Image (cartoon, rainbow, N blue to C red; front, side, top):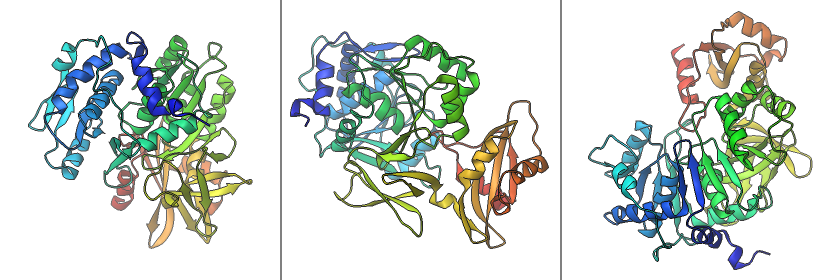
Length: 456
């Protein structure tokens, strides 16, 4: 049983106090030592004391995000992380918290947006651990995040200390990092996946965080060879790019763990990755609201994380979760937005979002199955399939993006699918697009796709 000194909160404080010269975070642009992060936090804390309530932070660089977190906690304000590149997130936030001030890493400035580039550049490394340094207690605010609105309205998700501390404790047996280990996150630190696995987990386990985003597959391979990370954090899209770019993987460490989350990993990509790299991707399932729920090493079924329980409604296939870090009422079952089917005594297979499970001709199936079939078609780069009502009856539609310089035709797509799927699973509407619309979390924007059906 873990002792008090072993708790994640204490380990984070120890990680920040042990060696001020240790590199804590890196990006493609620069690196930050512990002392530099603490020095920047001291400068930011002065600014954050000027207001009250949540403080919106639109930073992209990992060192500055860590500094802003420490500064907000030190000023007793809740940090709310924003994607600095998206105007619509700022607009959504202003609707939720009218008049809230956003602190940004870079311009442009406005009435409610303060640019701190000069203050960050002028900050000096701390020479000692500041007396004000503290972390939220279990029942205190830790961070807030704005959801992507890929399937609905933006909303702020508030997280408390225990939700991160308990989850990192559970992960110690699932994703252990060696002393002075290194995590390479391909996901920005202002998204839940990049924030938790790319910043907080390394901080708890005393590892170095490397954040590199917006990369081609070839650039990802270069960074893997350069840093030889112990853990790689990515989305299903990142692994698709890696598979396409890789010609060999002899430089990969046999101990590197590859983590994917944010959207289910495509089976064809998972299979290709395992064959090419000799390693299985660990596919994590969860959400901003619930945190981590379950994981699997492809192609085994999902199994709940330590401390998490799940159940599946036999009639609707609705997946429900009881988690020690889900928030809400302790010991309560929380409904997810997904459907699943049992696998053995303690596992499950995801069928997809409940609103993607459709019943056509009296038979229920998931649109994920149709998406997976489409992705095996030559010249198809991306595919998304979703249910809709056609003349008042359930049906499915497909949106497809072709490979660069490739041409796709609806008749060929229909013929390809007809050879692989039952007739009731075939899309009634097919749209061939230059690219699929995506939200800020790299998820397909199904709201935008459903608008195509409405306009058809």
